[in-house]
Length: 254
Image (cartoon, rainbow, N blue to C red; front, side):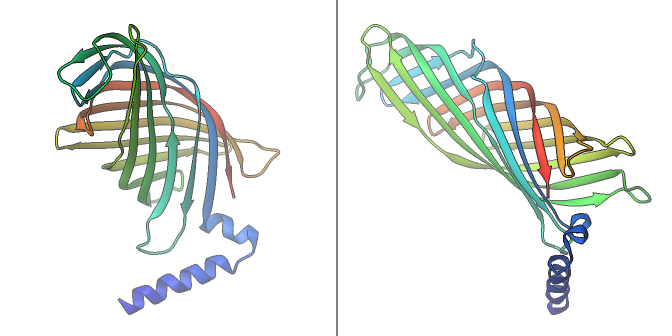
């Protein structure tokens, strides 16, 4: 164990003591920022105290900025890390059913503003295909931090109820990258999944990027994402929803 720790420390010192040109092949710090154009289908319902809102996702979410950051390094046994942020904003019609007291609703039609933000914290390891520097595989675990929030306004009375919850859901994570030589194009695929306690979540991302020749480290990227959320009473939220759509943006690798 002491030898492993010593080896890790020596690797870290060697990586941080090199010149900027030498650091690039060993450690990558990447930042990306993009624009998400999602579509939504399915439903997101909420069971409150004495009432229930049924919401069919009949309108597309608002377009939102998305972002992420990752760090990959050569230190043995220490996983790489990536953090990604995806905001979702929905405005849709809902039906309010009254089952008891403890709220301001009378029952009937309403409108709901739904916020479904997620932050993915991923710890993963990379592996290269033998005899090839073009293909890189990755595997690890992701903690998906969900913070669903619903604000429902009853049309007849104008009364409003707002509820929010949060949870960290562990997910398995597999991915692959293929770099096409000479033309600066890379193709990436990542898949995350969990089925646990009645919840079933999947998150698939497909992306291509292009290295800008005139600006070292800068990439243009575009892709498609499909996220499926089947929640079984997560703080009162029940859903069977699909959020999918194209995104585009830029990335910079230090």
